Image (cartoon, rainbow, N blue to C red; front, side, top):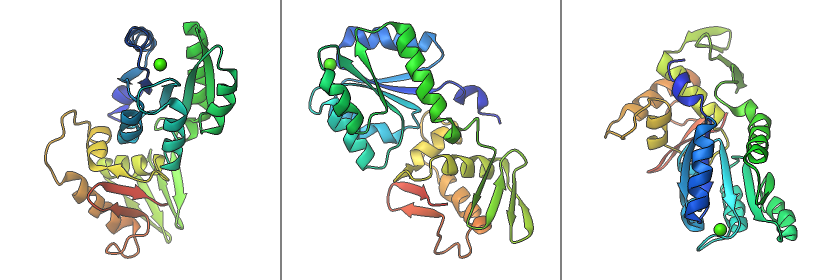
Amino acid sequence: MTSAGSTARPRVFLVEDEPALARALADMMTGSGYDVETCADGAEALRTAHLRAFDLILLDVMLPSLDGFEVAAGLRRRGVGIPILMLTARDELSDKVMGLKSGADDYVTKPFEAEELLARMEALLRRASPGRRSEIGSHDFGGMRVDFSKRKLTRGGQTLDLSEQESRLLQYLVEHRGESVITRETLLKEVWGYDTVPITRTVDVHIAWLRQKIETDPKSPEFIITVHGRGYRFAG
Ligand code: CA
């Protein structure tokens, strides 16, 4: 796939309000093959984490406006299933339990060694890997089967070809099924590779084409659902 080079680096959302630590961690992770975006505020993290296709969230506990537990719980309430690794202080032992209860997947205690953090991150990414782009080859839904490597859709004994763009769009939707909304902006960035988002109906046009192929009634779709004013979600 043409975007493989740009998507092979896992994307990490680093939520840490201590500037020196955030910078050191970002440098270390970037040097280890991750794409890192940082955020220093709990409420902002909760608002923005689901807007980008992150593979992993590193979440500090003590943050301005909302603490890490509240952010983790809020993300899970919103249906965001990205693995969360909490960064807790050593004397916050009970925090570990709270962190996991709030929806975090694992924790590391400060201060930690870079190697330990990277090992935990890799373990979480491996666990989450069935949903990762590089892994998924086919998907069955609604009596249909889509094979992404061959760009074929089998439906009712019929085989339809998907264009490369349709296949990549559907693959992205499948890999993010269950998320409450996939925005047009996200799709333009992740499927089309636009860094700055142009004003375009590209996404809607391709969604319409895809609906023609996978929906029984494209006017009242049951798989690619419109989230009014925001984007789409996938229910297959
Ligand atoms: Ca902090």
